Length: 107
Image (cartoon, helix red, strand yellow):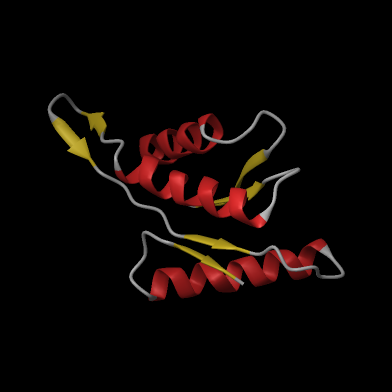
């Protein structure tokens, strides 16, 4: 499981800009802050991340291959606080997982 988390983190970091923030948020969740971007670029970047994770097999224990997927909840609306933005993104993440996963949902 740790190898999957590390591999996912590497994919997220290598497919975002140098000034974006990628941080582990909980045991198996990350928070990504995309700076200086617009909605079209955000959607493009997040869809790219979903595809990169899906198409990046992780080789473990010799011949064993693990394929991963990710679900992404995103918020770009203007809220008063970071907590409100995070809460909205978390709700979108929950909905993405409930709706079958391996997708991006925006609020």
